[in-house]
Image: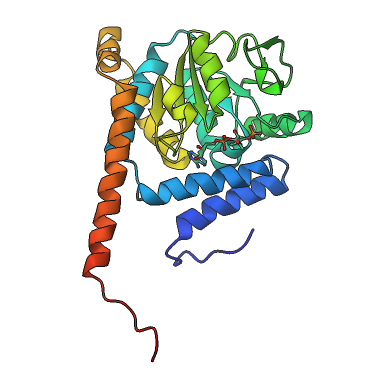
Length: 262
Ligand code: PTJ
C-alpha cells in the first residue's frame, strides 16, 4: 500500500481508497469496484464526509427493522469486504444473522476469497459459496442465492447494491435496507430504507443504534418504523447536500482570488 502520512488533510479518504486498491490486488474487489468507489467518493465530498441527520434517522429505522426481523441476512460484495470486513462480522454477530457473499461480477474464486476473509475475521456463518436457488426476475449470476440466507430472509441489508437486485428483493416482499452514498441511485429509490452514508461510517453507526434499541419492546420498534418514510428521508438528504453546497458557495463569495500573473 502507498504510505499516506497521517498529517495529510485527506488522510481518511486516501486510506479508504488504498483499502479498495488493496482489495483489487488481493482478488477481493472487482476492477469495476474502483469505479464504484470513485462515484461514492464524489457523493461523499458533497455531503461533507459526515453522517447527515437524514442518514442517522435512516440508520435508526434500519436498526429497528433488523431487530424486528425474524430472519435478517446481510449481503457482502467485493467493495464492502475490502472496506469493512471486521465490522460486517461484528454486525452479523450482533443480529445473529448470516453473511452471504453475493457478487455483481461473480467469479467463484472471488466468492471464496471473500468468504475466507470474513471467516478470518471470526464469522461463524458465511453463505454464498454453494448457492442453491435463484432470486426471481434476475437473469445472470446476481440471481444466485442461498436458502437459509438472503433467499429466505424477511429483512436484508444490501450495501453498495445494484438497482435491479434491490428491486427484485423488494418484489419478494422483503424489507430491503440499502447503504448508498448516491441518494439518486435506483437502489436508493427502490429500497425500503436507504442510509445515504459511507459504508465506513454507516456500519459502526448502525451497530450503535442496534445496541441502543436492543431489548426495546416490539411495539417501540414498530413505532420507529411507522414514523419512517424513505421518500422523505431521501428528500432530506438532498436538502442537506444543497445546504452544504450553499455554505461552500458562501465561503467562495468571501474568498479572494489568487493573482493569475505576478
Ligand atoms: O463485488 P461486486 O462484483 O459485487 O461489485 C460491487 C460493485 C460495487 C462494483 C457493484 O455492485 C456495482 O457496480 O455497484 P454500482 O452500480 O456502481 O453501485 C454502487 C453504489 O455504491 C453507487 O451508487 C456508489 O455511489 C455507492 N458507493 C460507492 N462507494 C461507497 C458507496 N456507498 C457507500 N459507501 C461507499 N464507500
